[in-house]
Image (cartoon, rainbow, N blue to C red; front, side):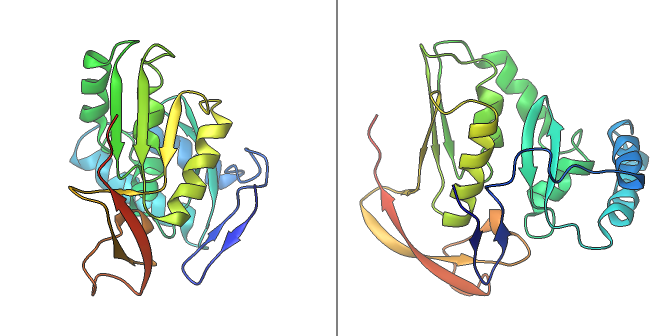
Length: 204
């Protein structure tokens, strides 16, 4: 693995997990955020705690959410910012739904995998008798996904593909935003730059 640097972001996929752990007062604020109730007051307090913790622009954070080890990038991925400080508000109901439906032999398809959180949640319930297929066209997010999959020892279970999914084979321009790399779009004026990616009609 190597460290990838583009004009959009910095990804460290070489340092061991834990290198970017919150420490000192940041760890205290982070822990407070995890204990907040799932209501409007808890949401507003979590936003304040997040601002206090990230005010010196903390670019990379290693923390565990939903019992999954993650290397997150709160400065350039909106999902990472929410997940760190507001896990009870970050698609929590969807994760509960997955726990109800996924079985050891299920097939789970993660289209637009981002940092691969959904695939790693699925890996809690699916074993080698099933399949987890993750698709992510953004090369930056692919590198981050691979790291998260590796540190959770899910390499053999999660199949990660650097392609987009469409109704036919093609290629297209992916617009990237420095504020939210996880929200890339094929709309040309969405972000500050573009990268060409492949799209495929994937047949299992």
